[in-house]
Image 1 (cartoon, one colour):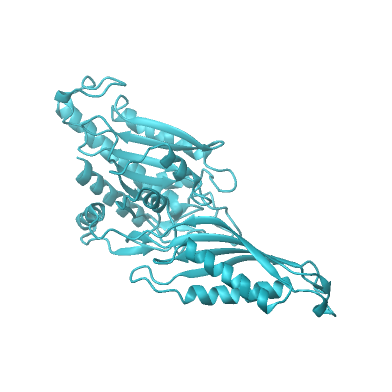
Image 2: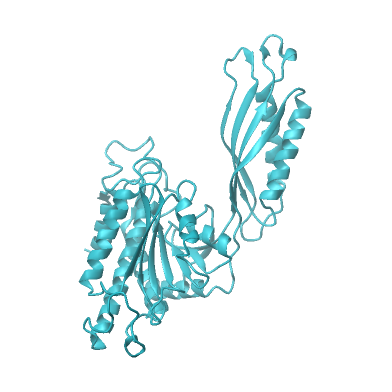
Amino acid sequence: MEGREEAELCAGLVRTESTDPGTYEGALEAQVRAWLEGRVRRAGLGDVVRFRELEALPGRPCLSACVPGRDGSCEGALVFCCHMDTVVVGDGWSADVDPFGGEVRDGLLYGRGACDMKGGLACALLAFDDLLRSVSQARWEAGCHGTCVCSGDAPSADDRSWLPRRPLMMLLTVDEEDFMRGIEAVLDAGWLDDGCWVVDTEPTDGRARVSHKGRTWFEVDVRGLTAHASTPWEGADAVAAAAEFVCRLRSSVLALPEHPELGRSTVTFGQVEGGYRPYVVPDRAHLWIDMRLVPPADTALAERLVADALAGAAEAVPGADGSYTVTGDRPPVERDPDSRLLAALEGASEAVTGSPAPVDVFTGYTDTAVMAAATGNLEFLSYGPGSLEVAHKPDEHVPVADLVRVRRVLSALAADCCL
């Protein structure tokens, strides 16, 4: 049955919980490492493939496996980047859907993380294995039956021809669904260099997504003065001031210039707390804010907008004032119109599906965007199975046909770039 291998691997990953917060990624990392090591042994490349492990957070290791290039290094690799954590299960699941069941119904595989992004992880792992088999075959045809590369030593100049032209790396990260500390630890450790081409397998609806709005987070405290609700003039209503702040900031953000590709900047007031009794003038309010910014807007401008909105709120509600803290600062990343990686992915898609993958923006923020923003390396993109529309939601699922397509496109991409 077409898709059996892809579906079985994805289902096995879904059945290992890796929620963040929750059980986290330790058990899944061990499962993936064992799977990779088994495939490496089967290909007879145990003396070639290099594994690295990095504990980004306690009990939460990042993992990489690299097939080196003909110069014996992993620099300039094509990288399949996948995060191992998922969001929590949450409420609202259908009674007959097990969030960790990995069940296939009518061509859809259900479970938490099925599309975000254990489906993409399964595709990347299988594409990595496809390359292992190609390298193993090339090694055999070159007559290097386990004798041309000594464990721990770089291959000699005479017997490297069977190794890939470009290295291929599997990169598994943690904490993507929270503060992205996994990819930050990987970057700090120097696992990725400026010559890498990096593909993450987030759900992209069949598109290659290559640019990102920035993501700036704030926490805002609004302070007032408590009083009896029957004499509100004796106090300063912090919730009323917060409402003034929200309206002013929202208007300011929506008035920012539109970007020709990324669209408009947005602001979401995701959580608000304030007051403690309905008959008491509230003396405090606390807000959590998510801004998605497009150039030329940046965090510095966002701070000015927040400060101005707080000043306006204090003027509208005498006796109230406020302060803010920036809790997340991810700059926008625009695409490189001359990206060689994008051209290669479009070619791989055309070879497999008959048409190039459409190019679009990514509305969220990914590990590869963190890499691009930190290093300036714009050879990055997102391409994976499933739709962001069902990620993080009850009854999350991924079409098995998407798993098949993406595995084949990634395999074609690796063959084109590496062999």
